[in-house]
Image (cartoon, rainbow, N blue to C red):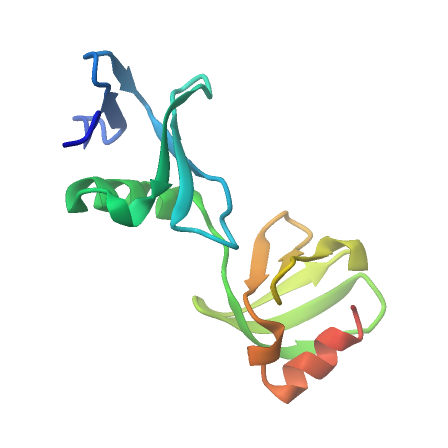
Length: 154
């Protein structure tokens, strides 16, 4: 049995009840490793940012709590995954990139090469001029044309 309860209140906000009966409204799940391990290391924090509980794995929770946390994370996090790079306006920055993501085709402006961040794994995070983060989960999984365009910036 869980040491806590989690539900949505009448206003659609997450409500946490701890083992001792303390209640917190407006609870927010926060991933420790959103790219490398999205299903691991999730903290539930109160409206002041204080950690209420640490969850090692999302998959270890009962289905209803998993669903609540996953829905809340999805509504807060917007990180389209780039599947293909269709066109780049220029190999100098700023440049406009036309990409195909898991959410459809879009265009964004890359201000500078420093907005492309590498991870230990073959992943990249690309921040556009508005601060939206685009994920490339595996550079090697991209098609040859996309890798060639990307290589000009790495």
